Length: 307
Image (cartoon, rainbow, N blue to C red; front, side):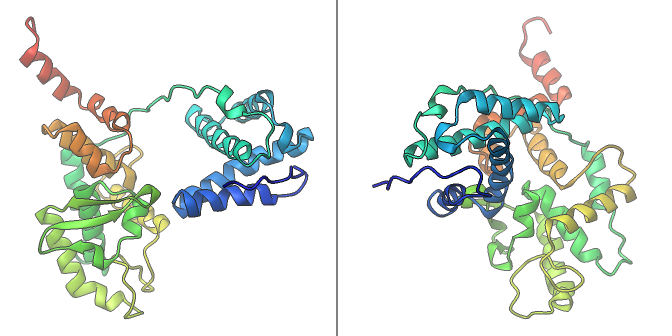
């Protein structure tokens, strides 16, 4: 049973009302810490707008939400970022109404805009091969970097997922790993032989030397023996992209895009790729079907009566 909460003044910085919402989505909804941090960042901006407009949370209207989105647009935010802000605010307002802190059910009156999917940036298979071979065998971290790149492309994991990957989550003998994705949802991903061999060699030779704490379970470690975080992974990938002389914006997420695109181009089932990527909505996965133009031309020639 929900306990009614008294209206909280918007003049209070990050009032208890907002804190209760963040606790709710973390504890009861099971959203990840990173997602909660993103919600807090977006809602803080909305909260500041309410303070400037001198609007009480109990009196929030659609017009106030619209004004907030207009300000974001004037700041030059991308449409995808504005859509994200809108979705976060809508969830927050629904929560306020359920808690009896918002008089009108404003969220039910707001129609979510149709989402635009940007065509993901991918690189060719020969460029992927050049990137995987970019680490220098003479470099002291060669085994780690090679294993990291191989695993990123072999599994399509997000950089946050591979950063948080522990030794216990990967079974090299069976060729599978357990990945903890968004919303703390676990999925099982097969790992190909090249990645297995690279990870095995890294575990046997280099990782024991990097581990400053014998009880650390993180798979990929930095030079100081700490968990290799997202920023360092991004820098490592960019370093080897330059070595491979690959043009354009290539990041760890590019390898995730390549993983999905190359699987679909090879004939993989869309639903299987959705499961491997950890997408909640198949529409998110479908964007990869529009990337490989050569594959589309091949399908057209094969099945159209007048190719």
